[in-house]
Length: 471
Image (tube, rainbow, N blue to C red; front, top):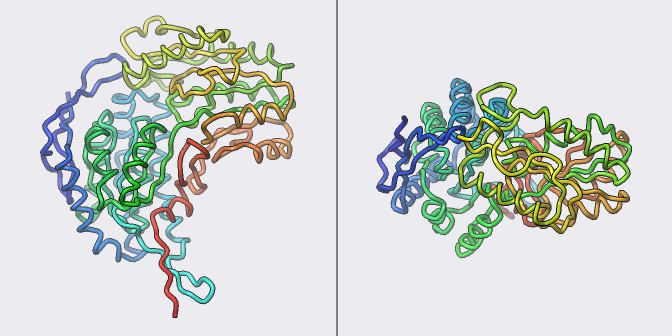
């Protein structure tokens, strides 16, 4: 059993002023594997003061200095790559295959920040003026539990590239993962105050970050509801905000697609990260004329999806992060039945032999109407809604009939046609015949899926303020 009783402020591990202790629970069997002492408002203010003091010198660093810090950050994390993966499997319940990818994404995001920094012009001539791209100030970083260290690494590396110190509030449920990452960052030798990490609750530490006047910008990944709360708190001091929020991503399979490859890809898109992914393709839109074929292929595919021990290399769906999340997903499965959707596979309860953990049966509903709550609300578990359409135009209309717009998917054997459909979808990213991530391309959402973009030049410029000098 591990005890986390330190936070990281001004270049050192320190005992928090906060006294609340939270248990850390292995979701595979619901046993307590550790405890974490949570920071409070006073701890948060000390971290902000440390970052503010560091800003005076760090904001004046050169590109070359920042690149050196980012390289040290990369090297320190790479050395403990296996540990970071293993602790994610244990504490979060992420499958081994997903946790490996998540750790790799953390490293790739640092490389992306380095490549972007090399390319960006921090002093530009615009018209007859000179424009200086200056660090925005102290950044508040608030991250969720579904890929904790990947989110921290991406946001912090972007802040460092911009010359901005940061105060980070990770999910308190990810404290074991955060501890190892913090040790890596400490070893990297970043200047004191450039990064500060306070374990704590969102309504305590997160709220203080979102309203404190010395925080110039917030980068948040999480639910739309919390994102709205952060935006309300931030407006009084006119903080810049990047919000990557929820999703209810449509996946359109066009009638000319190869259904034997498109359907398994669609199931993978829906159940990625055990369904705990804001980009999960949880609305599968299929031609009415192919519905029976799709039902057969989906059922066959899901029957071969291994649910179980996340440490096994062939496990595709692990436990949900907590009992609370398990109960939430169960309530949506019951709701789908009450709404009249047809249960194709899965359903209420845990898979046989997995009753000790927060395991959910991979569940697929067919004959779903887009107005049903299971088709409109983010469930955040392995639950897929299959919706049929008559025409391509109707498919696009259904896909866009949502409060969200984070990611979408299109499958077709005609690349030109697929791109034409992709161009009509209201989503920050559209994946055509693939499941890929590009850490140099912008990522973020339309509508209630958020504000702003992360990654590459679009992400970096969100941490910079243009200042015009006219002679």
